[in-house]
Length: 121
Image 1: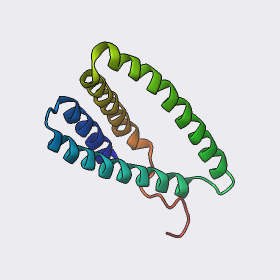
Image 2: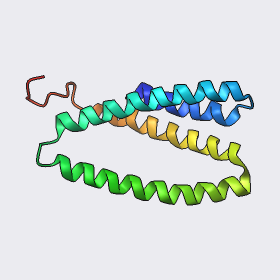
Image 3: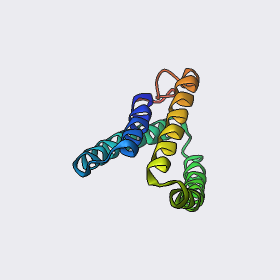
């Protein structure tokens, strides 16, 4: 998850610095692949660590938070793109994703070595 988090951040930063259409297409594909691997890893971790009774609550909270942050960030970043330009918004997004990746790297010491949590894998 750490590698893919840094990959998503790096691809977003390069996308913000890019001025070639064909390279933007390649970066979009790389972003999609990295993001899907990261998402699958996170979902696997959640499903293996949470109890069956907690999973609906976790996914409900995750959906609500995702919807709220998507709406607010669309408004905020859309306004920033109008004022500062799209390139700077992508650079800001890449920096924020890098900060999140660093946090994952620091917090990874608190993750269990295995995801089995006493269950048969």
